[in-house]
Every structure is written in C-alpha cells, then in structure tokens.
Amino acid sequence: MATFTPQSYAKWLDKWYGSGFDLAVIDGAMTAVEADAAESRARAPHKSGKLAASIRTVRPRVGAAIKRGLIRFRLTAGKRGISPSSVPYAQVMQTGRVSQFAPGPSRGQTKTAAHRIEARGGSYSSGGFSITGRLRFQVSGKWVMVPAVEHKGSRLRAHNYLRFREDRVAGAINSSVQHSLDKAA
Image (cartoon, rainbow, N blue to C red; front, side):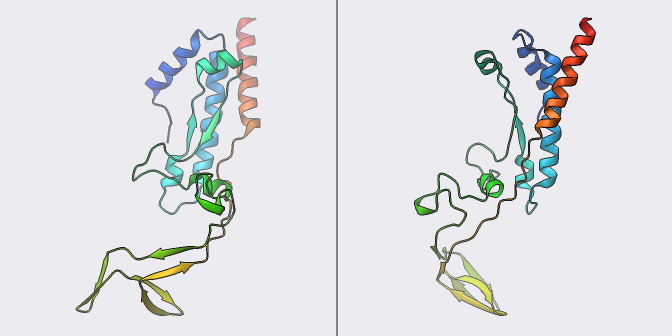
C-alpha cells in the first residue's frame, strides 16, 4: 500500500527543490520510512484489517523543515476525522493505554474503568418469538439474555506494531549524501 502516487510524489519533491535540502536525501529517507510502514502493516493486529490499512507515513513539511533546519519523518496509524472507516483505537493498540481523551479516571491508564453496558433497542428473533432490548451472550455454555451488565473494565496490552527503524533511515540518508558527493566530485 503506497502512501503516494508517482504524480503526487513528484509534485511533493518539486516543493523541496528550492528548499536547500538535497532531494536525494529526502527521497532516500522516504523510501526507508515507506519500508517501515510496510513492516508495521504486517506486524499490526489483524481482526478486520482496518488498523493495518490506516498505517501511513507523514510527509515532512517543507516550511517546517526550512524554519527549524531539520526534516521530521514519521509513521502514524488511524485516520483523521470521524467516519465508519476511522480507527480510533490505533493509539490504544500501539501503547496499551487508554486515549488521553478518555473521560474520567481511566485517562492514560492500562485498564478501562468499570462501566455499565445497556442493551439498545435492537431485537432478537428465534423460533417464533422475539425479544427486544436485551444483551445476549454465553455463560458456562448457556445462553443468557439480560437488559444490562456491569463490566469490570478491560486490561489493555500494548502491541507495539508501529516501529520506526532509525538505522534504516540513517543508512538511506548516508548513502544518499555519499551518492550526491560522488556525483559532485
């Protein structure tokens, strides 16, 4: 899964052309970061595949690089905005910590707070009868239907699927710089 199309990548590199940074360095580092993204996609937990599909590289910004004098290459997961395809649990899966935006005492903890789960207005039909507003699940092999349950909370485990290999990026930058020096000589 490529983050860039060839056309968008060429357009993005054109922005860097006048910045004073060597294009070969930018291109080499982005290639290394894309390889890290591919490895992270393979390492991500695969239940629905949405988490792995949301892993992407963050393009370094030319203006910020000129202003600070450094180029920042990053990987991220999850999608911006609220949509059916968003992955709001990406940070929780990576770090094992409840999101910083979680309400109450569970913020930043490795366990969700105890909470009540209530049935919605959905219905269950089987064998000629229908029941509405019930949660249905198995306990000791028997099916149980209740209007609500008290959940004790969940202990979260960090999966650490999103990894940025600095040695790969540094190697790509070093070889790009060496190649540029060899061309100039």
